[in-house]
Image (cartoon, rainbow, N blue to C red; front, side):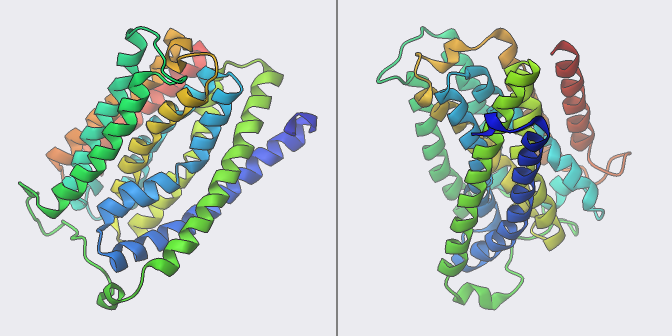
Length: 343
């Protein structure tokens, strides 16, 4: 449909979809905070599962639709490129929280466990790539393993939060996950949940527009699918995570902010499994080029740095933020520069 538009209108459609994503994301953050208080699930769980998955819907549409049309590189790089971008967004959120390092104040064992799950899920595509190109009903066995791992990890994350075997040291700068309004716990979460679901549909529709605009831009200007996926569609469809993270920090919902990024990244790994199912020419993982795994490696490295920051819990580094935030910006900035130079 977008193929008939002029280049100017194509870019306007891309920008309009991005604007919808931004506006919808702000409202979804407030709703997620209310749901966390009313349902009693906690900010880390709601941020990691509900908000993280919902804000990833636009990116999921991009990856699946790209795989369906046969562009394995765009489907893959959109998913893993988004993970790298969203992790870098935590450094931006850290800058907006001037009291202390965000990872120090938002100490939560559930977020650390989600981070470990993310590293695990990011290594499975490498296993699939190095394994024989076997498919069952058009799906590589590792894709099914990724879905099962994600589902089991959600169960374990809830158990870790409910019955932690260790807890972070509480300091005067640690922000406890407690409802701002005690009366919220007595109210039904269904109203906010339905509104949240409606906004999630809008995000998914915006993701379809971004997917079509990105594919058409790649075709018109002859850029690589990896570059288009990692630096165009991935960044735009990751905007909900940036907006919701900063909005959550401003609301004082720090665990929601960190959990939304880590949980969103964990959900984003399922883009690869879903794209494998949509790819009709065999195993998605074996249709990739060596360069497609660049952003996967960057995502693993950035997640490891983030986990180190969550364990170290530095109050404030020499730059006014934690060492992990400085490292995340440096890694992502270097990766973008390298991708832009290498094409």
